[in-house]
Image 1 (spheres, one colour):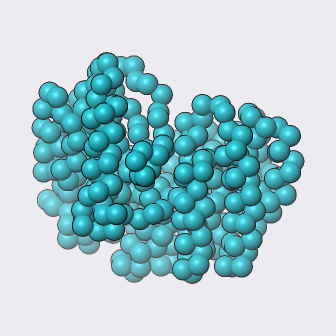
Image 2: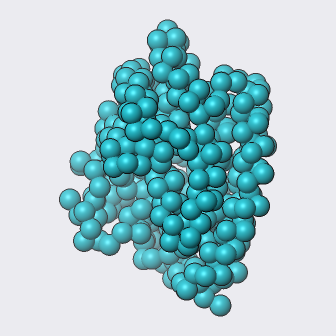
Length: 345
């Protein structure tokens, strides 16, 4: 299947299901399909991100991942209030990429097309690239401030690991690259190698805790995660926003995609998503099958121990390490912006 085929399938879902909902105000593609040519092969380990815009301030809960006509689609609902101006979009690193290229699927009022054209014109302007980098940097710092000792250990881990991973987005944004989710470390490695910043990349892995992760050990962790994933997918009932990620149809993304990275020698780059997915499985067990929590505890604890994290105190120390690394990340982002010939004005 080509990228164009996957996009056509997502378009069909929009027309048949999303567009008939009250308040539908348009839809557009987001994520990796906007960064790949239409004639490229659609990866079996990927999905199509679709943003559905609805009028008013209230939006339905995130639909998340679901299987539609053989394609995994991830649908997110946005209020039209979040798209009031091109400037509002241009300053947000996680939204601007959705308008960088023609991406509109449906546009009853013509407003989305106007926004896309305006954002596309200014996407590479230096002031907006700088502002998006600031947005990503602030997301790291604000997210880390949410870390606290209340709640289960796996919730504490989630509060730490996602802001930590956004350090890569600061750099990818500076490089005018896609701030991808699951493959963020792989993309950051390629970018920093291009700009001669490999030492910083090793530092990013150090604060994640996986700089010395071996392929053999990563395979062991993936095997343990695979068992927990299948168990969680079989029992999940609660309406988690990530419910579609823990499902049989999403296994190719969460499990097989991680396996691809490990087998290609990028086991360190796979660790971020191993931690995120395993932590989500633990959240599912807590809510929907507490009796499974102990059964899959050892594998999770071994993974976290290999990262040097076995307690809240470890997480607090690692939080401080990430915060201490931010000035280096920001300096590298500024260097990349200065050297990047794609940035205008």
